[in-house]
Length: 500
Image 1 (cartoon, one colour):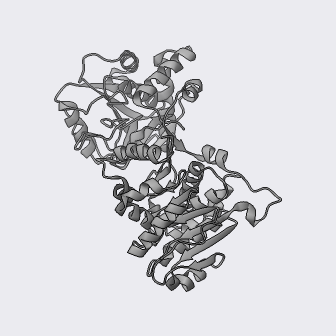
Image 2 (tube, rainbow, N blue to C red; image 1 turned 90 degrees about the vertical axis):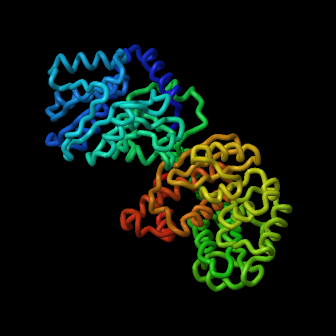
Image 3 (cartoon, one colour; image 1 turned 30 degrees about the horizontal axis):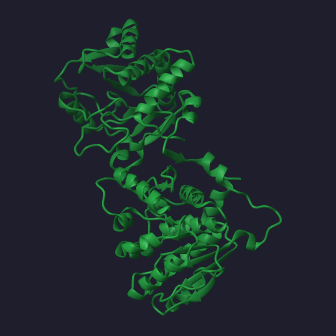
């Protein structure tokens, strides 16, 4: 699914109105009816609602929702904030329609007035400010939003929480409504997918309001989401007449004294993702551990407590390096020598990223097409600090294009950045993935798919999707608190089955 800017969303609305030969008020009615459909499927008629509306189109949505809920027998009342005497045409139209039904359903809130007596059991529907927001809320409106945000009531935001910018990270201390649910009109907003701002949106529900597919398909965006349809389009099922050589040989390089679990998890994940053969290059001290945890894998050793030389890589179809590797001087030298010699794409994670952070000159030696899988701190060590997560992602796009690599920037919504600067947000997974070893499993998944001749950025996209989905499936018998990396491994097969 493409992610559009606020300007592109407005253009899509306008194109839909023109192409469908409808009025803007009719499109608003369509959007409001989808919101009401969601609301009435989640709340009984015993629920009571207060709808807070602004003078723009978001407020028009709120007024239309108020009218529809009232007609369906729900207890509802709208409050229109008078921070502009000039209502948008569609907001004015829906205000008149609501007043014609029953003028007591709407209260006008004059400037510098606040609502302080909303009982806790009443659900607040936020339709004050929408995607047209061009600057932070100020003055009375900002104070009103802060006052509403502090109320303990459940809150449902229409399209976007009031005060939340769509295309940027909000300024520190900006006035924003924190919603439990956001009913978003068909398209994700980038701000939903970043930790500084996504926490305001709560659970996001995409409501298809019939925006024109011709416009959506024909309009370029550097930002998209990885969903089931994309994953299925990338997946290549196994053919009948094949053998283990068909599915590639993976070499996992990692481990050091006390850190053998990581590389063992990576090797197991590589097998679970379909690699024909998996080999591990580890220090001698970890031999018994690795052979016990990953008995299917072949095992080669280098050094005793840490790797001193990287060998065995020339016969591998894909190489994953870094889990548990350590950053000993000899290991760093071995990694540098390996980068001098290797020309095929590799997957770089964990301590291999930390070595890159200490030796910036090695960045230019990374083979074209390689995949780096940093979490935010690792990314910062390698590429430098940025002020927020959205700027970090833009910096990742620059670095991916500069070095001709794919960067998997791990976060709540992991972003896969391609050498062309395209960004794919993965939208499955859950907070249970924030556990030791989770990233090591992901490295094994991606390296395995790379060995099976997936294009590097496709291996990254599919690997991240399967990783998140396996964690979601695992919640059938685990909680997010109890989820561990081995649970992700156990459910990789179930994740693959959804692609058939």
